[in-house]
Image (tube, rainbow, N blue to C red; front, side, top):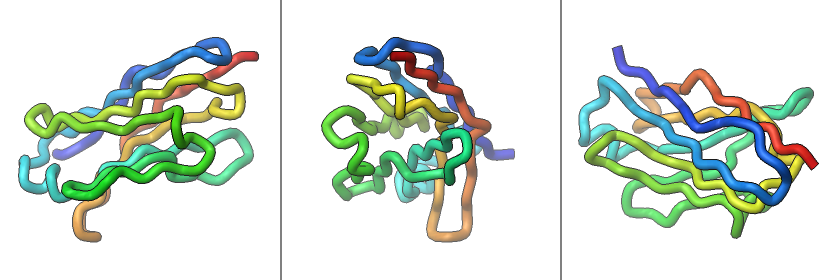
Length: 119
């Protein structure tokens, strides 16, 4: 059974950094490389939003609120992708989810990892 598992969340003070990881298991390399790999977040009382996304061969895209602070990257051989978060702000506090979407037919979400940024 294919699934995604996030790790790396935690609590930091404003200005700090965290690195989230997402491991895709049970997914063949060609599917992984052809997928839209995204990081989403959901803060209390708010809708889930796309934070960063990368699709093979394309430049990554970012929400305006995180541009210049967050970086998405991949390690295809390990079926992993990452979200490097720097200069964290209290408004970045949320549950972060990774998502793998392949040609509209495969859509997996991770279980979520909490990121808390204190002022």
